[in-house]
Length: 267
Image (cartoon, rainbow, N blue to C red; front, side):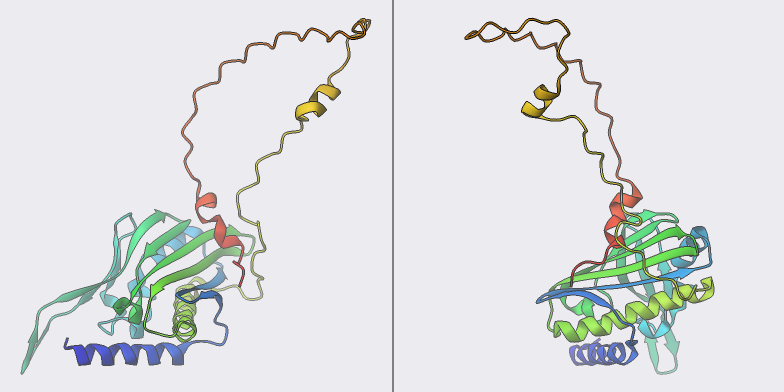
């Protein structure tokens, strides 16, 4: 593709993004060099059904947001290092012939089947900019069905005005989640989860007083004679500490890895 054609394609893509942005778009955070777009939906389908649909983007990703113009050319390998990629079909017609090409939309960095998918990459017109994006899609079971949280965190140097591109990309993110949710039967009238609904539980606080308070709380021995005036009581030797068991390696749970999605970040 020649440079002038590339610039024109990027401009057209940006115009399409702006015009498709829905009124319900939600940019939760903006800075001078980035933004965060967040959407969520609740569907009747099970987490397994949501996962199987999610990893098959050819069935729901919107064709107008592909480079080839057809979502059937999309594939996603749900494993670390896997590619969310698109095939550019070859063209063999009178007066025109091209070889097959390809595009990497994003790369998978975490995949927890039926729970969460995290990918990195600059989508659409952001691909020409010195930015990166982290797309986290978290899946959780709720009373009404299955909750899907879709968050795209973008940062870096870009030639677009952040408020403009943020609104445009946010609109596309909302449209993509809506397209994913539609065949899974969205549940309407469900409020967003409040802070801490799925986040990891806080560690229990110790009920044992510390320092002087601990010594004051120690029970006195019945019949013990008071210490003679002017002489300090002999301190009893401290018992030898019990040997600690060897530490067991602890893996990060899905709730800990993706718990930050439960609470909306400050604007």
